[in-house]
Image 1 (cartoon, rainbow over the protein chains, first blue to last red):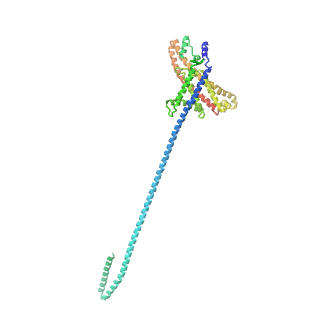
Image 2: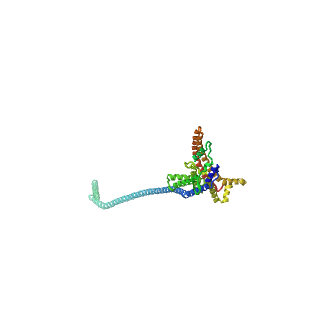
Image 3: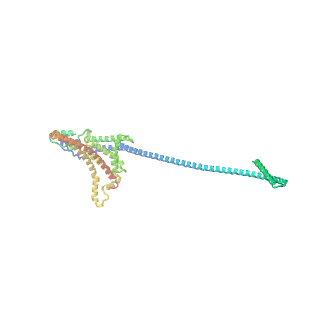
Length: 187
Length: 267
């Protein structure tokens, strides 16, 4: 190299710029080779790892967000289901209460009717008993009264019309008073 | 270096010598055991250290929420990883080529940018040998990848025999395809990078030294034209920064396309 330059300077000749110097070729290859291996070993793996980590982090973030979203959706669905179940439950309870109320009302009505029927029956029985008693006592008294009346009629000997009617009047008045006293006793 | 060039011009007197290829032949900065270490060689090493240092510093913290440094590093790394490697090679195979393409892109980019960075101001790949080295390596890699996948014969058939063409055309097309896919690619790859860096640098030196010559030796209109040349040199510098980036990008893009072509199932 140096000799070439000196030669060129001395002879006024110029080194053809297209003709390479072997030492320049060699040093360029060696220096580039070292640079290539340094970059391959120290630079590229770092960058590639960083890119991979970065995309993994971004994808991980997206995945995490998606799982959170899914979780929230599931929870919402669960809550909605619980809510609808609660609504069903409430409706069922309401229905039951209504049925029970209706049943109670029906039972009460039945009881009241039974009670009324019982009271009516009782009243009827009592009336019947009283009637029977009245009939019995009447039957007994009618005999006596008829016998008494007949005796009196026969005793007065039925003289005149006026007397006869008087006797009947008196008998009836007696009967009425006896009846009234009987009724007062019964009551 | 510009001042050195202008000094020679000034010493030689009136006539202006346009900067030629000799401005790229720099004397060694120092020697190790008789081996002269030149500026572009140092630049190669510095570029490698800078690229690795920055990328490693950015990558080592490995935060899921990146800091400023890591964010910038990831952006740079992903630029090559996603928009070059993955988009071209395809998401199936790209992963193992990412370190190679990342190293290649930033190595070329920093070396190219040295042409515009003060105190360096020399494009490393204006030394043809260095461009040849990277192009030769690219050639070995894409052919090696293809042969590893398809076998030697299968790979040569893939690259040379176009599908969907009548066999009568083979005598014409097969040599042509072989020539363009196997032989020409490394040459164009190397020359594109080398020539862009070489021409850009020589253009800048021309504007700078020419402006100085106009001011120092022409006078009159030279006092106007000289500073104008320097303004143009500044504008050309910005253009050069764009070219420096584009050449690094194109080199890596073509590498990825060649690898993709070598891995493809059909031509």
